[in-house]
Image (cartoon, rainbow, N blue to C red):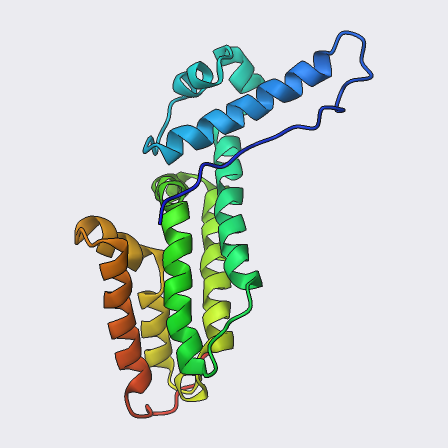
Length: 213
């Protein structure tokens, strides 16, 4: 599973009515800046400097800051890439016949999505402490992932708050990142590890009955 490089495009009609093409050139420059930022992060530069972005986009440094008041604006574009991958998980119908099957299917789905967004998510996590925008995006990411799990979890899990919270943690990007980077597991072994842990939680006896909120 490898992350595909995001592509930013602009409409060939935008600004075409302006004689000097100034608007079109401005939009093309913005698209190149965003594309450069995403490519640098995708390549592992989690904190690319504005100068590096300008060089990659083949524009002047002033052009970068003319289009983006600060680097936070560029990270916003990166967050949209993350949101698109999570939305793909939301939109695809589940194939599992039982709640247990669907939760285990969710392990594999998230593994695929996490592999794609990993460079962007790591960059977001590094910068979010000083960016209210990234902090809000991260909160939405976590809330969406939690809702997906709630919709697919078996009823006895939803009645057992501690076990549901344990599943929510196991299916998080943070756990996936630890397995892949800190424990140096291959994607396949990371999936097998999570499936084992998740299946164990799902198959335990019913808990004390604290409802999930």
